[in-house]
Figure 1 (cartoon, rainbow, N blue to C red):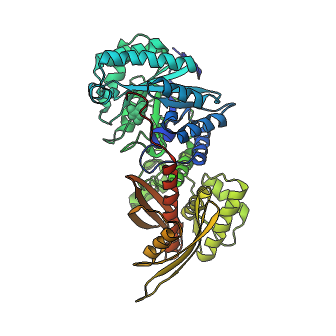
Figure 2 (figure 1 turned 90 degrees about the horizontal axis):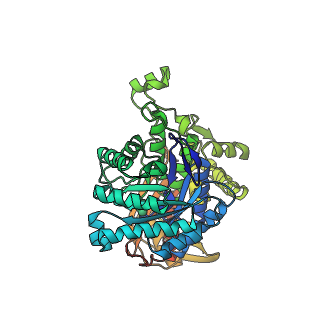
Length: 526
Ligand code: KIV
Ligand code: ZN
């Protein structure tokens, strides 16, 4: 039987709601923080991808979080996905979330409380009956501010079954329209998830009138498997993130869950609204914004996900791709043409290639990227897709950075102390720096600190080649630490020292964003 939902109207029993929490559960994990403009760009990409709900943030956590959720809600003021704000049970949390999402055409408040014996005793220091009262009070308040309310049982998979049923029943009675059971610590096995959802459907009055939702963390590498088990047991919302980013080992990866549903329609005869050809573009945009690439063997969006190395496999694929491919690379956004442009290629060809790679740039961004492409093509005979992606990620996605590298010269040689001279632009103001060091990279980083004094620890410096050949671009990752907070920055260039400087400056910009954020107030008893 279809159910009627305030945001989606009549929902067929086979329709799965894709709830994306990249900007909330994903963004709060170490090194993945985004500024407002980056969050907006990501939200637009998620809307293009066709997600049903964007969890845009946790508005009470900081003024920055509130502004980002509100800006995303404004962006989708006329139409678009449901915009969701997270709140604990305290009235201040719920009112802040309600205020942030108000401009959106379709909106949801997501309120949660811990229900497991361990969390209630240690974290909340509350008796179960008091928690049950909080469930009713928080959902009731949320319903006064939004028709669409989701309630989550934090640490739900480690919650005592009878108590979980009572909490879910209370939330439904108070007006929740989606009930989410998180595997907060990534502990559950698929069989546990099956048991929990089957139990809720059998025992809780009204469970057939709400959307049951699953939210899985990947500590045992089971987040996607658990999400699929939940669907098979009757859940109709999956909470997931692009590239599986999220707390600790991450959340269920959206691209994996969606492609499992599509590829195994025989076992999961379900529908969703995702435009799968955009999956790669969404993955790349997130990697570019955060500076974290996915590993090469990552399902769906990793560099090797459709690469066939063994001769036997290559032979099979040439005869009939379905011998070794369970889905087509094109269905998730990969293009077959990988060797592309050179120094004679024009702006139109460059723009076409960017489009095929999933980048839609405005005129100014396109001009910046094209200028750097020409510089690169002068130094490199053949420019590959990977080069273009590295270049665009490096240049265009950083144009709002407070600190920019505008010039760099390094003098080095055998027996000579390397010396770096550089110019930064900090909030539009020119700053020059000069320093020596134990090697060219060390001298460069010292010169950055000389131009823009700051006190952070360098935790990682790694260099990778984007493609083959001595003219290949280097992609450098720099990890910095300040007050226990880690950030990763990336930079690419055919000159390894320039790439290193770009990576350091990128990480520095991310630290500046972090500094601007304030710690969440201890507003609620959670
Ligand atoms: O993992 C979790 O329990 C959460 C909740 C806030 C939904 O992210
Ligand atoms: Zn979570």
